[in-house]
Image 1: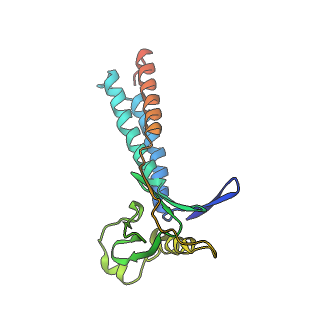
Image 2: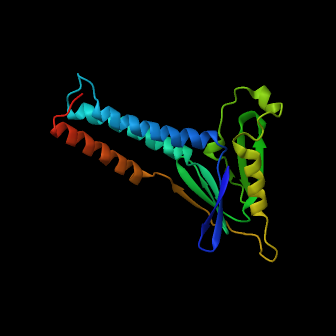
Image 3: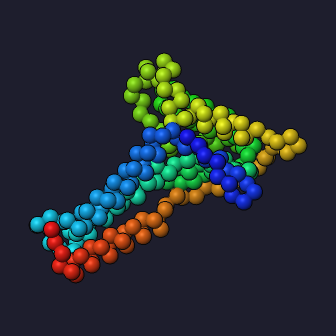
Length: 203
């Protein structure tokens, strides 16, 4: 669920949404990557063209990229700020800005309320409302480690004695694209497709 990473003299506590989501994301990305190279190498007897060879590999490598982004969702608690790393964006919240962290049984959700009125619902905890009766019954309340993560965030946000609360928000939102990773993977697929086509290797 979590791990502590040392960066110089500062320790960052990394909280992950349970085991299933990271496992599905990382394992799925590995499987899709392998299938992408298989699709380029073995395009089929009726797909003897560079475009057909590249297209199959590109589609699969893009899916692998998306699954990696899903599996790498996390919340990192640093010395001064918390980073909420979701699928498409990263939100940085200063220590002292968290007003309350609430759990909703009916949707597996975790909601972070900030002192300036902003409400953050991390993408990693969004889920379907199916099976609402079971959730309200109290089963799976700690699904995706959300109870544990809520407690850690609340504990982390507590002010250190002698340090005044943060009055003005100093929060940075930025888009999480990971386009460099996708570009590198895509270039590898292109290189494989071109080299195998040039060598006239078909299966």
